[in-house]
Length: 164
Image 1 (cartoon, rainbow, N blue to C red):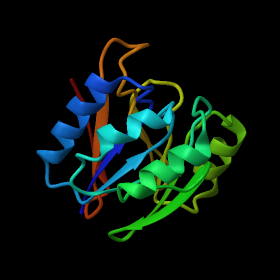
Image 2: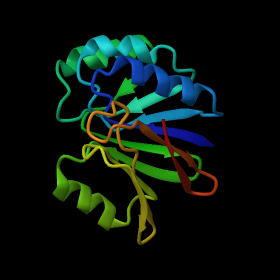
Image 3: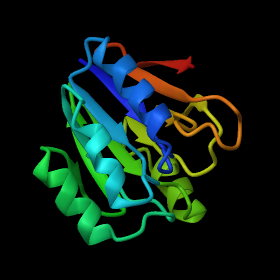
């Protein structure tokens, strides 16, 4: 199974559209979003996504109830500040990452095959023990000047970082 992983889109509509176009061009079966969509009006951009999306809220997300409702209307789900997803044979934790102690605890616990987080806007894929730790960077490109995302192959537990 191929999973698209994104984060920190921050109302940047052109880059969100580009990211969705890129994800739609891949054999993606699920997208995980690690938060910071920002405002409910961005949900219309995600309607074009050809697969289901599961996300969590970030520290910059306003009007969370409305965000959740609007995503649900188009078939996606925001699970709060934390999501546990089972995909392929992997147990995946998704968190925004602004609570660093909680993030360290999730990674260090060894209870998850993969931990996905965002917040720092810095793309990073590494292994800590038996846990694959993925920060897909930022879709918005505000801090780094580039948009990045990750595709995770669950059968091989391998992640590939892409930039545009």
